[in-house]
Image (cartoon, rainbow, N blue to C red; front, top):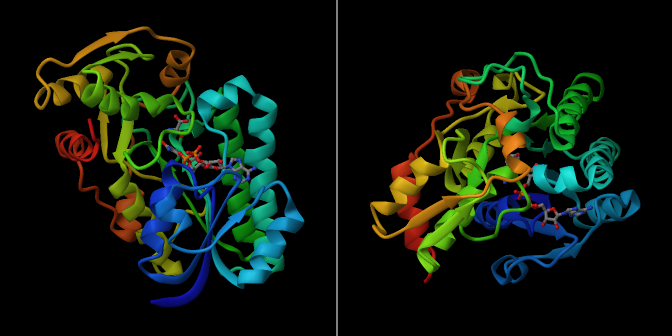
Length: 312
Ligand code: NAD
Ligand code: SER
C-alpha cells in the first residue's frame, strides 16, 4: 500500500465511483468527495467528504485535514446538461478547476489529474483519426470550458511547476454508476434497456459514429498516466486516447448477438447536433509512444462484459 493520501473530487459520478474503488487497492487513504452521496461500496470503503469544489476554503480544509498529496478532480457538468445550463457549466468546470489548481500549488499537492474530453474538438477539426494537435473550435459550452481547462493545466505546469496530467476521454461505457448527462450516455443506457426491456429509443441517429471506451480501459489509462515518470509526459494540456468507435446501429447489432429480439428505434434530439460536432475516431499515437497506452476492450468484449454485469 502506498502511503500518499489521495483525494477524488466527483467521486460519486460515473468515473469517480470506479476510480475511487480502484485507487483504494493501491493507496492507504483515498478520500472520496462530492456534492452527493456515493454508492455504498464507495461510502463504506473509506472516508467520504461532502464538498462543493466551488468552495475554495472548504477544499483547502479538506486537503489540509487529510494531508492530500494527489488529487483526481472529476467534478464537472457534462455536454448535454451544460447546453441546458451554460452558466452552471462554466462556473463548475472553470472555477472548480481554478480552485483545485490554486489549492494544489498553495498546499503543495504533488500530482493532479484532471480529465479533458473529445468535446474539445469541434466541427472544423478533422473527423477521422483526429490528431493530438489540430484545429480546435468547440461549439458546446462543455467543450469550450474543457479546452480552456487544458490551457490552464498547461499554464500551471509551465509557470507554477505543478505536475498536472490529463486525458481526453472518449465516451465512457460502464455499469456501476449511471451516465452523468453526456451526449455519449446512449451507449450506457442501451445496455440497461436491452437487458431489462429488450428495446431502446436512441436520442442519436443510427449512423452517428463516436469514439468510445470501456471504463476498465479508462481507469487503466488514468493510472498508467499518473504512474508514468514525469520525463515521459510530453503533453501537459491533455493526451488523446482511443479504444473503439461505433454507431448506435453497430452497438445494437453487437447486443443482438446476445439478445436476438432486441429492438432499437431512433428519435434524435438536441444531442445529435453536439455529437455531429465531435470526431468519429481519435489518433492516440502520442499517448502510445509516451507511456505505452494500448486499449484492451473492443466492441465485442465490452458488450459481453456489460451484459454480464447488468441484472435483469
Ligand atoms: P458525472 O456527472 O457522472 O460525475 C461528476 C460528479 O461531480 C457528480 O457525482 C457530481 O455530483 C459531482 N459534482 C458536480 N458539481 C460538483 C461540485 N460543485 N462540487 C463537487 N462535486 C460536484 O461525470 P463523469 O462521467 O464521472 O465525468 C467525470 C469527469 O470526466 C468530468 O470532468 C468529465 O468532463 C470527464 N469526462 C467524462 C466522460 C464520460 O464519458 N463519462 C468523457 C470525457 C470526459
Ligand atoms: N461523454 C462526455 C459527454 O458526452 C464527453 O466528454 O459529455
